[in-house]
Image 1 (spheres, rainbow, N blue to C red):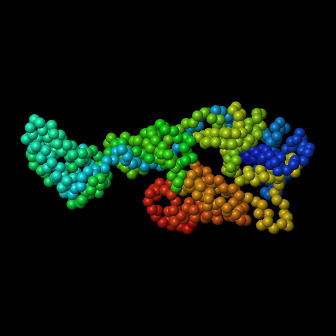
Image 2: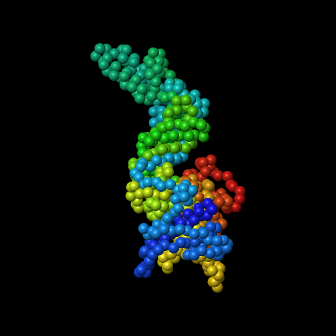
Length: 538
């Protein structure tokens, strides 16, 4: 008995939505016949508990399974399109009444990210004079160095000349009279300054003045402490002024660069705290703050890069590590309804308004942003209205509901009372009758990652003959479609999606197409590298 009541309630909700939509379509497309019995008494409708598409005006047997029909009670309607549902049935189904109210939306934004060395933490070591490299004290890239530690020994004819000029100026200074001492002091200081401007250490200049001996080579120390991230010099090589010889980088702090989809930009604010999880540090959550948003959208992935500095005192974090950034944001107060109070049907959205005394009325609304558990409502509702929540069980019956809506709209146009029967045998070929049918299907898309994946699949299926409607839910990783089975089958649609590089139900993706997808559309373990060929035909 409970099963019969539940099916009856589901059908009643569909009847209400269909009746309302049929009225709207009738007013828009056809001129309604006058005297449509708006105030006529509502009859009791009868349906089959096993085949809810069968609706009769009188009791009897189901024409399909020959079971007894059960009644569907409709009360006098004070507002066109509303239906009454028994309170006991509502309680059994867990339907609750919720209010439309102003509230802030909360949203958790997730984005892939990579650790890089900050620009200001990189130092390029080069010479300011021409020289020949005698020795390199750095073993390999990745070696740590300290500030002042010797890294190169070089020989330079220009440096020899500059040393001799300083020694000559010192000799002239020692022999200068009172009248010429000022000039001699200036020559000595000019020779010293020339060596300083070339980056020669003060200790080398002091030793030169003390020993009064020209040194053929000079030791170049590291100007900073850090890690050698690039080595572009070998012993015996020629070094020109400005040529990069070594790159030394500090690894504390590091920058975490996250790629945020452009559709998430309305949620993003500078100064927003974030949580970071890295596969290299399982079980640990790092925290940082969004400090900068780059002023450019990447054309391939349709993402915007944001910068998050992370402290790295123990050097546990390494450049090149990848991870996931989780950003929890909150909007300003907006008109919002609970997520389970919204019925989505392709590009349209509906809510079921509670009118009181068990009566409900479908209303079409225009939705905005989607937060955690709530939708923003742009048009169609006002604050304070009461809605039915917990009605998302109708979504899984979207295809059946759509067909019921179309049939109810036609019934309303002809009679004002819905009566849908099983098809009677006719002389028309079965294939001709099937051409008017639409089949609702659900397709699992386990490998989609981002909005770019959605756009790629939408582009692949666009223009398919027999595809009436196609909608992808990225969060649930699934698609809903309505097909004309005489022109397009589910397996054909799956193969089209697989050829675009995505697995559809049990039809595996085309490996070659998957390799051509941008990094953001690949699975995390495949990003940034070539993908191995997969077995199985798409």
